[in-house]
Image (cartoon, rainbow, N blue to C red; front, side):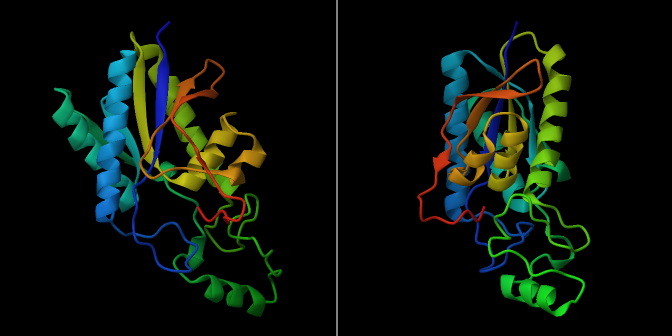
Amino acid sequence: MPRLIAAFLRHGDYKQLANVPSALQPFALSADGQQQAKTGAEIIHNYCQENSVAIHPVVNCSTLLRAWQTALEIQLKMQAETSQTLYLESHNDLSERSVGSVANLTIKQIETILYDDPRFEIPPKNWKSSSHYCLPFQGAESLISAGQRVAKHIQQSLSQLKPQINQDTLKIFVGHGASFRHAAYHLNILEFEQISQLSMFHAQPVFLEYQDNQSCQHIAGEWKIRSKKEIPMD
């Protein structure tokens, strides 16, 4: 039976606003980020060549600019390396966690609003990186619920694709570090404790084989191990 493999890629480097917890910032890749995306494409190409894996022609990516640009660089680089045409599909479901109506306010501004509104409790000190905490604002998500959203998109995409393939095939997903790691928990790839212990390198793929029980198994590519002093902020 042919294998179906997913490649998760966190977007390349970009310059985000300082002390702003919202990941829905609409900024472009830096020059480093563009090069990281090209390198990620080379890693995928080499993996597929070495393992005789076909590349699915549709690349799924987050709608945020940095993820779309990363996917675009991958598309262009892969097409230059092969004769295959790739297509990009942007999906809100692959975006990072939303903080809702306080998007792109600073941490201090958000905490001031919480302190000043008598309806709200004081947030925990680690509220930004806490997997289960959800800000009490319209449209806000917890990290764990954002990961569930991403995992659902990936499961649906892979389950629909699985019956259609007749050879080992790789499907590319370009998104965001925190939502991918929380999705990996929902897909039975990571234990809950590992979510805060790991991160993702910019635009370096983690390869996962899709299982019949709709979970995935890590088969190649490295998670980034956080230092003990590093605070999980992505």
